[in-house]
Length: 113
Image (cartoon, rainbow, N blue to C red; front, side, top):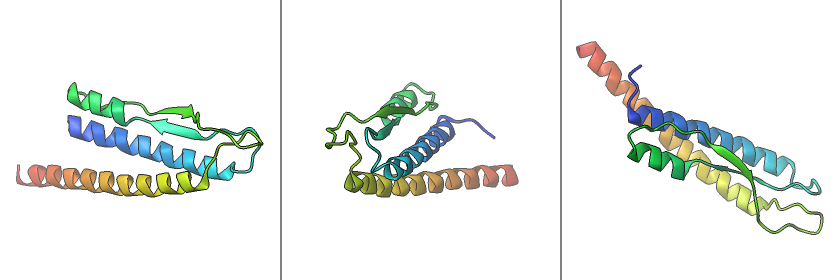
């Protein structure tokens, strides 16, 4: 397939959002695990810089949350995870729709080409 900055950026975004969904699920699964600190996935700033530089490809990174912990050393907050999950699902849906539209445009060009 044609490798445009847009297609690379969408692929990077989908990979990062997928990784974030897995981290959120892992956080919720460990909500009662003593000493567990929530995972956070970052890629948006790096992706924006990469697109600005004409590339579009980035790798998401996972870090541990620095938010305060409760008495058992765990810092997973169900409200935070639920909100993050909702946002991530919506972003993923938007990115998949954008990628689908891009593929439809490429197919149309190849068909008429």
